[in-house]
Length: 502
Image (cartoon, rainbow, N blue to C red; front, side):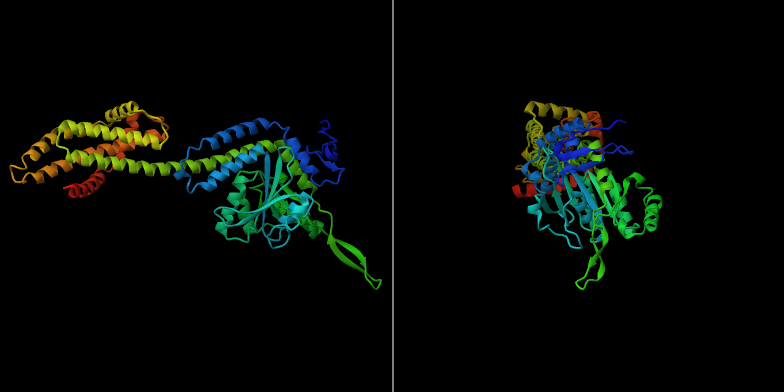
């Protein structure tokens, strides 16, 4: 393979010959500590994933622009909607996010600081905002993750054109309980494009469980064996082999394990005031090049594809939550519309003694209900279209539709005779009248309830029957109806309404 030169004089970066594993080692000929990351993000713009990135961006922009949520439906979904907006912003700025996980004391912050070349993340047991963030010219924010109440520290490198890299430091996985730890891992891993899992020796049970959970997220991951400077060579190699060949063999490949010393301690001879010599341990130069090289290779090779893929996967999950919630809210509202139509039709049928008006009233109530449901689901429908849908549903309903017509024709005649004879009989026929009216109203109510449920499914499928024929959909819904329960509910509420009108 020939050497590859990519804008060699850009900000003092000069690529050296390709190393055996295909990576590029960079030398930094200027004082700017961000140049390796500048190069990585510049090279990301040239990779073949540009097309995938553009398609993902267009798809997500269309998704955000067509959420079709009413003000009522947006209540309680604010965080999900914000997540989609953040994802779109991430795509538009080609933002690659690297998240670090690990137990307290494993050196997460030290590893990130070594990668950045400056002490942006505080080291030690306490988490907090770095005091010199402004002078370092970083974009730093401390956020509380939804559903976890845990804070993360997000640091963004200054943008390079339209691109950006963000490093995310998370709480120690042993600082929170198992349930919170799982929620934290899932939440951060969903938005991250690359995961760094930091260890400092043989893996503990808590670390293995967390590593397994993060592996399930399907994101690229590097296991970073930190603090190798604290082990003799033989011990360091033995621990590494045990991790590679036993602990994580089923989770990671050897190429995904990197050894580093983010904050190595070096023994330095110093002269005391009395002239004697002593040995002090001071921070040495971070041994982080292998990790940085692997990250740069990933960004160079598939950075934009990673951003596009991860953003769309996460957007798909968020959108599914939005759709489920939206449909649940609309389903509840639709049931209220349906039940209101059921009771309106039942009362009108019960009180009306004229057969022709019974049939007209039944049709009008059903058409009005269908139009109300179409508005609720955002489907444009004319009155003529509602009548046509009602006819199609009525024909598919078979037995229930026929029962309503027969009940309306037959019982209306009996009800009319009983109503007319009430004065002559001194009101004796009122009891049979109410009984007939309740029966007729019950049949009409069940019919409207069934029509409403079928209409709801039709509209929820985008004004289509889906893969099934109308009769199949109708049959499935009719089989699920508990007519006895519906009739009992109709009778109870109808009796109360009739009592209040008498």
